[in-house]
Image 1 (cartoon, protein in one colour):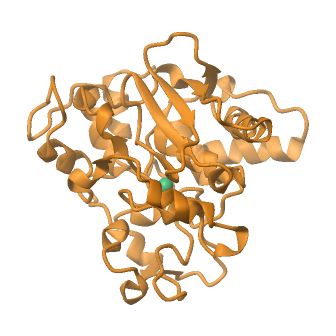
Image 2: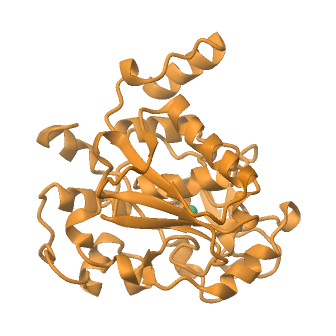
Image 3: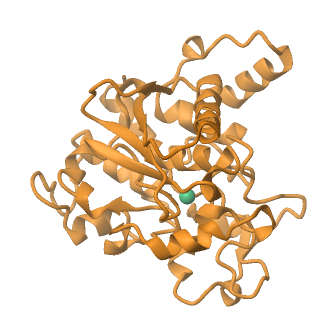
Length: 315
Ligand SMILES: [Zn+2]
C-alpha cells in the first residue's frame, strides 16, 4: 500500500510495531534478521525492549479465574488483570516461527478472522460490533476467513484477554474469555488494535509530562507494565498524548492497594475508556494503514459524526 520513503516516515511511534514492521519491510536490525526458526530473546528484546522473553509464553488458566471474577465494579479493565507482558500482550510459544520476518501490518488493511465455536450468539454480535466500529472510522477491513495464509483466530479459552502485536504470520490467536472480555465492546476493540500493531498509550516516551505513575501503588512484579518507551523507537503519527485512547490503561491498573497507579496531570481527564476508538486512535490507525479519505465509508447517517470523522482524520 505504501512505498519505501513514506513507510519509513511512519515508523516512529510504537515500540513493537515500529521496529517489527520496519524489520518486515527490510530495514536493518542491529541483531540481524532471524530468518528461520524461533525468534531469539535478543531479537525480542530489540523489538519489544521492555518485555524481554516474557512476551512469549503459554496462556495461563489462573488468569482466567481472575477474569471470571471480573465485574463492571472491579475498577479496572479485564485485560488489565493478566500477567502477560503489559497485562495482555502475548505471543504464544507456538507462534514463534518466522516472527522476525513476518510480524507486520496487515496488507491493504485486510484482516481475515475466524471465531471459535465457543462464542455465544451474543458474543459474536459484540465482535461484529467491534468490526463495524473499525469499518466506520478506518479503512481496515475485517473479513471472514476463506483460506488466507494469515488470519486471526478469535477464541474464548479461560486465559483472559490478550493478543500479540501486529501480524505475526499464519494463524494468530486473539483471546477473549467470555464473559469477562466480552462484556463491553471496547475490550475486543482494544485487543484488535494490538493485533493491528499498537501498544499501550501510557507507555509513550513523553508520558511523564501527562501522567504521574504512582510506583508505590503498583503490584510487586508488575512495574514493567509501566515502563516508558524510548523516543527513538516510537512514532506518535502526529497525535498528541491521548488520555482518551482505547489503548490507555485505567487509573487503577495493577493497583495493589486500591489507590491509583496513573494520575493524569489534566484533572478533567478520564483514563481507561473502553467505549471505542478515540479520535487520536482513528488518526493513528488511518496513518499506519495509509487510509485515504476516499476509502473511508460514506457516512450519511449523521453529518455531525461525519465531520468528527474528518477532523479525526486530519486533526
Ligand atoms: Zn492491551
